[in-house]
Length: 454
Image 1 (cartoon, rainbow, N blue to C red):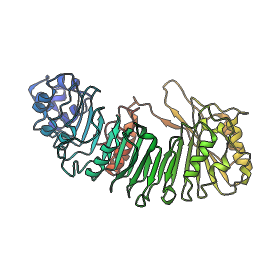
Image 2: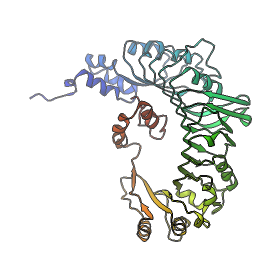
Image 3: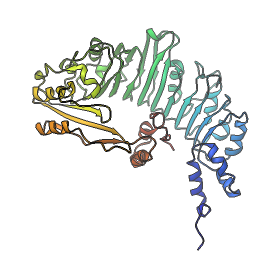
Image 4: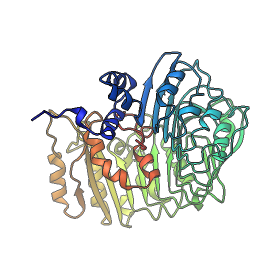
């Protein structure tokens, strides 16, 4: 019998295999195998190009001018994007990279040709402070759901995009640039989640971000002042940092979860931010502060949680325990679950250490407190991790009060089991949830995870 080979596969299977190749440098040799493969190589649905050639525009048009291309990632040494009018009509996802010397002045008018676009990832520095002088269609991208900027974006550009992209659900930004002080209103009837990591520019010290976003649930901004307008009443999850000086209107929202993250430099700053977030609706409070400027045992846990009378779960990182003290914990009578999260390979539990004494104080000082210990382990082929014996002993001492979670394994980013183990749940979720959870823009450390639409 004749041995089977790749040429025995149907065209659609070979096209799928070629579409999974990482970069164009892998696809081009495949097109040289035979005439059949040369034809199939032009029918791939996912393509990643890294090129310094000046002829990249014509090359893209020749290859994909009549193709049903769905996902495109491109790095190149020129600022022309006119080719989007030729090959972008069926694209669902675009990732574009450009150096600081490239000015994409006509980018927005060209990207408007991609009317089926769902995801847009921009790694371009110079997009300007406006969308350009050309008249743009409204809506600009009617099906766009996920938008991420991995470079600074001017707040006025963000305002315009939210107005003319009516389906946007998730917006991620590295930095918001504020050229002049004042109040800037972000208005969207579809936005579900919005995030920025930094704020810069001449006007950042007197900058207020006002949100008119009725469907907004996740709000992760690093700006001095945030003003929630009356329509923005569905916020459920926020992230708090020292640079946030004022949040107006938050107590009238449906806040369920807050995260306190670095940097903080004093206990007073922590308590000031707690006062800003006072609400009865809060269910989960995640505390991860470990700056050296905060002395050990300087934050009273009872005072920290007092503004949140409806709290059900307090989650604290192992590295943050030393900042807290529980001398007054006996006054905490309401039922509460405290979860302590630690990394197996980094955090060491000691019998006389502050960490174990903290947990012991929670259990012994209040009968309504339950403690869960959650251990995370980043996989290593040469190790066989075990739950620390000291914690197992402690859990036996307090049955029903201390719960020792099973060891949670987190696969390394270069092992394929990460995506395989999650693929089924991703495909069963609504499109926006799949993008929000698994898009490459959300997991920079896991570069093997493709865009959600791949």
